[in-house]
Length: 474
Figure 1: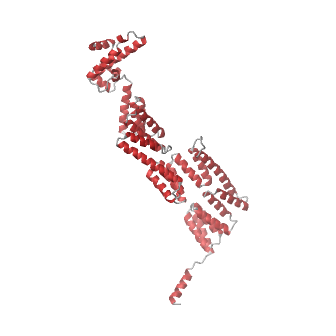
Figure 2: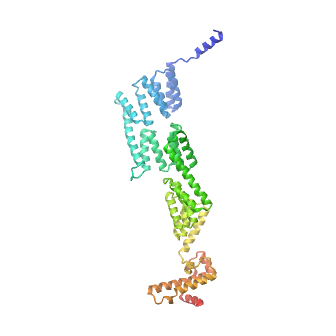
Figure 3: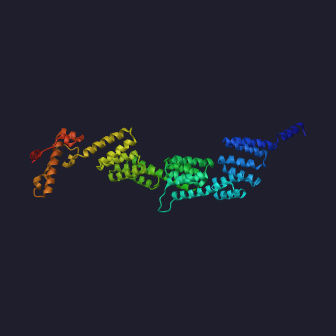
């Protein structure tokens, strides 16, 4: 052997690791110190070095299992518990930690059996008794939440109460997978999308690329109307598992509603209002539970109906939009506009006032509210244009023609042989016709009338006035 080969062999012998049980004890103490300081990653590393120096010591495995558990590395913690119990089948702490790992992995039957092993070793072990009771209580809360979340036909769903049940179940059982899945559905159902995303992040922290976590986060984005983000999440799941039913269903639903909404918007922009209405109607059928989106779709359809002067249908769609979202400014504005078309002036004022309350800095809303109040004020007066059967832009000749026609129709002489009630009604109508002509035939009075002044502010008319006007024409 050459001098160089002999030197390398000697160096390799010097670098060869030699277990040191005494050093292992020191490393364990350092690990305990870091564990108490909640530095669980460093604690796990120190316990790992202790194991390297004394691989036959069950305590070190049990300690590292505790550190893994605190880091939510349940698979690794369970493996260390199994090794500790292989070395010492009566290691109660290892059994307790193993049971907790089973709970976090959703294996409650194994957890209960493991706690029973603890009680066989020490029947007075109160922590084991408490944990077994927690499993039973937690399961009851879960079952109650499941019935509230997924009720039998004819029963009502109650996500808020389900969330309370799940909160208690999670308090007793921790981050139990089934609890988190149900809690995610409940949070989405309650419209708590931010909290649903936070829960999804917790799941993904425990299990990177978890299908449950990705589908939950994607669903929250979907109901928060962030469709591109939602689609991306569902595609990630389907890329690994093309048969994942929920991801596939949510992906199709998201793509469909996005496509139909866009079709409706494009048709509206090109004034193809019937096609827009058809697209919005189909989009509304995709997901009846998507209240935020459906509120907008109803409002969009109402706007298309408004353009077609289908006032009543427009009004009904505005009602539906507001029922789903009582803070939807656009829906209040549209309902206020169509209410005026239906002569519902006071209702229009209320809608514009609500819109102003929701968006107080919007000048256009303030302007529409002002106009609506004026229209409501005008509506309380006699409609002279309607009384004469003419349009609001009628010229002098049309005003005279309208007067002649309506004065002849309601002149008391034509109704002299009718009942007292009918004669009184005719006289009233004749008086209204004369009033209307007096105001509309006078440019100054007409301008004041059109600006919204009350009849009382413009002066009244007597019977002599009516006869004088009639004699001028006949």
